[in-house]
Image 1: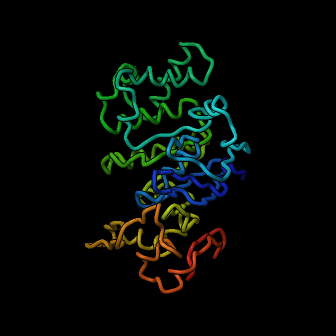
Image 2: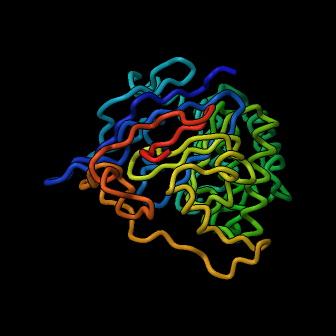
Image 3: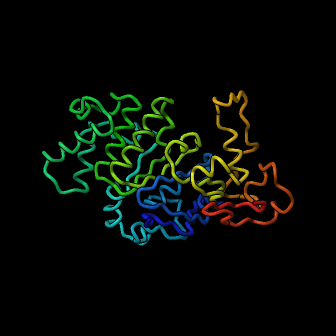
Length: 319
């Protein structure tokens, strides 16, 4: 199956007065057509910066300093603003974790979706209205005519997120980037939104890049998982392999910190320490200060990302 998105050696840094923050440091991965890929890791590992880099939305003091982002064999980083606007919100759409902060409080839900249509499509008002009502129904919002005329603050968190999804999908994008789409929602609504995304992915034949810190979420939807730490990919594999046979100590630690009510875990394991400052990464392996298996060589030698099993990549000297 062909790659829809192919990222090669991406480096996105933030230049402060006295520091350079290496938020994304030499990251490479691809997403195939009709595939759901998840990027997981703690806050500060570079996940969201990858997402914004894909859309070339890094603003000062941030800068994409190296790499290629090929979408449909076109390097996004070489496109001008006019060409980028044709891709953003049309071929590639994005939804965020706080829908209320992204929705315009002065416009009704319907008018915001219509605006997305008219920005990218040439169609009549009648057809745009029909498409909007149909999409509101598709994402599971009841009484679509009423929702069309409702303002964002009049909706619950779950309904706001469904409205955001409707707006993102109205142009039928090839790739949807979902950045922590369920963080602000309760567990029941989380499950509904994830189920909805998976259903829509099949219905619209699109690819999804799901970004989250919660491994229990990706188990339900992702086909492939990328684990990030300290601005780097530390493990990448088929979702089943990551859960059944995690190879990087960081991935193992993340899995042990997830509640498992079936096994009756009454105490969760924690990862000691915190994510390193991207301006002062430790020498050698970036995870070694927090790793229970680290020894002298881990502090000195920086590991590469290697395929240790078929289509299972790991950045660890002991694997």
